[in-house]
Length: 134
Image 1: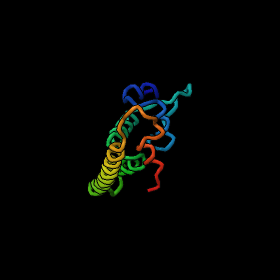
Image 2: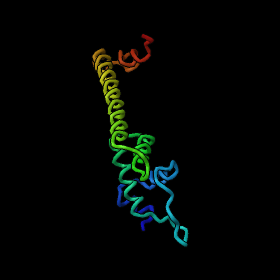
Image 3: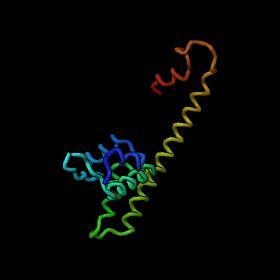
Image 4: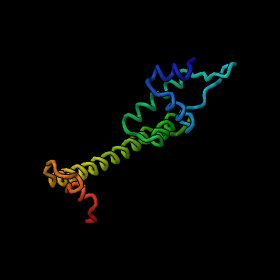
């Protein structure tokens, strides 16, 4: 059995993040010792590692919850369900990449308007373009 601090150390996860995951139900509430300390087991460790790996791949908390739901025994979940959720996430990432590429292009464009001189920042074309309604 592990304390929250030991669980954090073993997973590299912040203690507050573990507390948050408990609050939103991604990690079940741990048992308590006679003295009232939280006591985490191997399943908590396994689940927290899963959550961290999913989050590192950009899955949101809700998407991670969906993935965890697919792991529940006794259900009629299939690999097709897992693949569908994953491919939907890939589509979201692809759209984010397109959006970021548009932002990058616009930033390069407005950056080219500025000569980078020692003139007053208040007259910088970059700042002026941010005020511009067009």
